Length: 412
Ligand code: HGY
Ligand code: MN
Ligand code: MN
Ligand code: MN
View 1 (cartoon, rainbow, N blue to C red):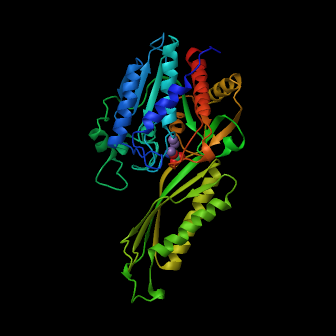
View 2: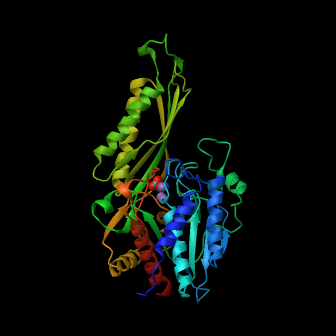
View 3: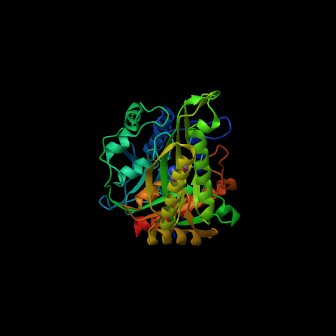
């Protein structure tokens, strides 16, 4: 394996500098998709890439591609990247690590004046988090042909529905001219923190990600009747929030009943009219189901629909259960997985195979190119939280493995 070594301190310094854009008082980052803070992060990344000799293009859903030439300009590129947008109470590593590890690979090759056979591309995917605009992974999903471009551009801001992803990208100057999709790609590798406790518990430094579990997201609207909290007898009520509370408890029970592996979360609830002395007439809430086996995701779907029907009937309310997003459990490419495993083994980093609990842009890239991922531990397995943290040595190790997995692919 070439004796190229990444510069862990430079990578860490870049992560900390990017983390200052949208930094929160508790040490996290809030840099929501297509906000001005996202623009600042994107601009910083683009400047760094141009300083590293890359040419940068932006596609029509705002995905950024920074390209370092190889000896053979016609060879399909070896691509790496992730996302710069964060959760509202996000951290300094989720997504950003994969983007800046890609930049560190390019900087390392530049330092060594090393030319790969194939070009190298670093990508920043738009709206991976799915928090401000839903669903998640919209930039990579449009790129991979999961949805058409207009679907992505029309995504409404979940808290300010008058704003759309397309309008906000234009406002920050990242509604690019490039057509979406179709960039010749030999392989795509994404480095990411695990966002769970397994690597840390098993005392491993590198996760060889073999694939990602499937997800189903729902939007559920429960409709009852607004009425006065005082004169309305309990038996006469059609309380949408009481009905929803029973359904939300059922979501948790369905998750617990489908162990091991099932995940079930209600993360967004909107009550109307949300007034202390009016019985709620309508409640909107979301459900996020995950499981590595598709048949279990289907079973959880059936259990959810049955529970909503039961509790709606019990409370005289109506429940509309809408499936909002679905992707099946997704295996990664065997050659890419092996390239990661060999790079980890040769660097003698303790490693293990792992399935991703989180969705990543790699899940959609796996539909259009051979794809692999590299995980590193994060402190206490916590992510989507301002305390998100990682060890500089693990961050460097993951980037080292990324470099050598990419070299195998770029020169192979
Ligand atoms: O929800 C996820 O798994 C990812 O963070 N978008
Ligand atoms: Mn992420
Ligand atoms: Mn995330
Ligand atoms: Mn993700």
